[in-house]
Image (cartoon, rainbow, N blue to C red; front, side, top):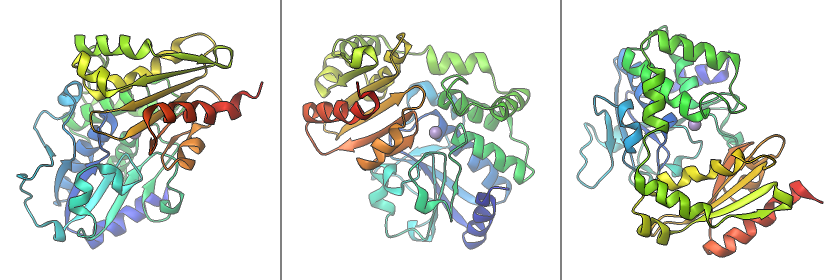
Amino acid sequence: MHRGFANLERFLSRHDRFIISTHESPDGDGLGAEIGFREILGHMGRRAVILNSDPVPDKFLFIDPEHEINVYSDSVELPYPVDDCAVFVLDTNDFDNIGRLFELLKGRVREVFIVDHHEGGKDKLESNFIKVEASSTCEIIYSLFVYFNITPSRKAAQALYAGMLFDTGSFRYPKTTPETFRIAGHLVELGADPFRSYEHIYENNSLASFALRAMILSTMEVHHGGKLIAMKLTPEMLARSGASFSEGELAINVPLTVQGVVASILVKQDANGPVKVSLRTKGDYDVAQIAIVNGGGGHKNAAGYKSGYSLEETFRRAIRDMDRFFAD
Ligand SMILES: [Mn+2]
């Protein structure tokens, strides 16, 4: 039995009112996990409100049919004072990765509990629920339904399925296990719709995002004999295309569809945002370690960090960091 179950039980025994949040620029996994986890707390008669720094991207709106996910703003009203709350942080092991909301909560909330599957939180393994082998945070939330003997509603089943679909890249990334498929199968039995989920998440791109992707791909640099491709996403491209930052971020996966390419870099910057680096690899190239050294985190084959350098300087450095894999 994972120690996270006992950790969670102890945490629940210490607190009564909760805020549930996830990382900034939330994705299907974080959002699905929030919906599922709130249902669990509801079954226990606990009060929990979902509050995120950033809005739900359009393609994930179907995860939240009852509009349970609140977006933080100066006018947002919580049902109870921040000082009375404990916080659940889902799908990131870093409390300050929840975005603007962090400024409101830090130093005020009673305690924080992390439910996550990313690498880089070694010091937090003891007291939270961190399972890096899990395909997704939604997979961990499913295990909590089982542990507490609660059957997910159709709504929760749909949310968890969507999170797993997204975080496994349609059930093909390396952490996809037989257990992942068993869980997905059960969620479909409970009412999750595979076709509709796929259509919402993967066939729902805007025309502007298609134009943005063309711009990003046109920046590509090929290194190490075609094994590494690096690209840029600039604020200027966002303005020119009219597409959103989160739509542009997905371009990171395109190079890996090319035969022989095993590593992809996307250096990106939102309007007025920090320069960020996304790293993707196939096989035995551990980019989580590169991200951790640079102050970030992630998984062996998918990781990222924020940079203090200019976009161009960051681009050069990110390519150089990858040299270790390709000593020719
Ligand atoms: Mn995730």
